[in-house]
Image (cartoon, rainbow, N blue to C red; front, side, top):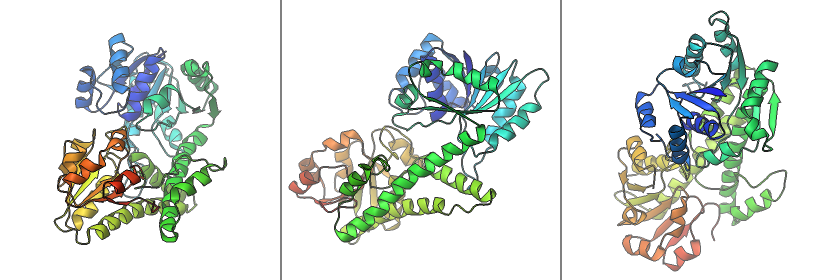
Length: 433
C-alpha cells in the first residue's frame, strides 16, 4: 500500500520506517525544513536504538521518500497518518493547531479515497473535528477517519513498533476498518492482536493508558517516601506488589520519577477533557504533583548531604529523561539541576546522547565528556538516568577524583555494596541498604 506520514518526529518517523520495513511505500513530510534536509542526507534527526539502520535501509530501497509538502505526500495514497505534536496550552488543554493544519492540507491535497488516521495523541472527540474539515474537501474525494494510537516507549520504540503487543484501531466506517486491516496485515498475519473499536474509545484509551502508567510511577515513589521513614525497602515492596498479577511489576521502580513529553501533557489534556465533560478528575493533577515532589525530595537529599551546597560541585550522570533516547523534555535531571542551581551549587552533567540538548535547555549546566570527568572535584554524584554503561562505573576510580565521596542514586541502579566498599556514603531512593 501507499501511505503518507505527516510529521517526522519520534512517532511519525518510527511509523514510516516500520511500514516501509514490512513492505509498504511511504511518503513522509514535515514542516521543519532542517529535519527534511537531514532525512534526505540519510541522517536520523533524533537518537533511538535501531532507527538509523532502518532509516538507511528504507531510504536506499526507495520504500521511504521524503517530500516537501503534505499535498505531495498524499498524492495517490490510501492512508495518511497525522503524527504531529499536541503540546499543552497554559490551561492544560491539548494544542491541536498542528493537527488541524495537517488535516486541512490533507483535505486540499488528496486525489482519491483516503483514510485519515490520528496517530498523534488527541482528546476524545477530535475525530469529529477532523471529519468536519474533511467534509469540506474537494467534491468527489471520499474520506474515512480512524484513530490508531501508538504505544511506543522511547528507547525501545523501534522494537515496540516492529513487534507490537497489540494494535488498536478505532474507525467510523466499515471501509476505513478494511483499509486498516490491509495496512496491518503483515502484523496480524504474524499473530499480533488487532483491537477494533469506535473512534472515541480509541482516542480515550490512549489517555487512559498513559495516565495509569504515570500513576504507577508516582504511586511507588510515594511508597518510597514511606519506606524511608519506616526502614523498609521499596524495591522489595515493589517486587511483592508486582508478584500480584492484578498489579504487575512494570512501572513500579522508585526513583526520580517520569519525564518525557507524553505523560505530562497527556495527564493535563486528560484532566482538561474530563473537566469539559463535567467530571473533575482530581487524581490526574495529583499524579503530577507527586512526580514533582520526587525530584524535590532528591534535591533535598543532596542538599542535606552537602550541608552547605553553595559553590560545591555536583555531578549528574544521565540527563535524558530515560536511557536509550536523547530526549530531555521534562527530564527529571534538568529539574534537579535547576533546584541545585537555586541553592548555589555548581552542576556538571554527563550523558552519552543528550548532552547538547540539555545544555541548550539549561545553559548554566556544564558538560563533561565522561562520567569521570563529570565527577572530578565533585562533592556529590547523582545517578539520574540508568544508562547501561553507567552500571559499570569503577567506584574506586570515581572516589579518587571526587572531593567528597557522596553518591545519591536517583534510580536505585548502582552497586551500593561496591560504592560503600570504595568509601562512598551511598543513598538510594526508598531504602537504606
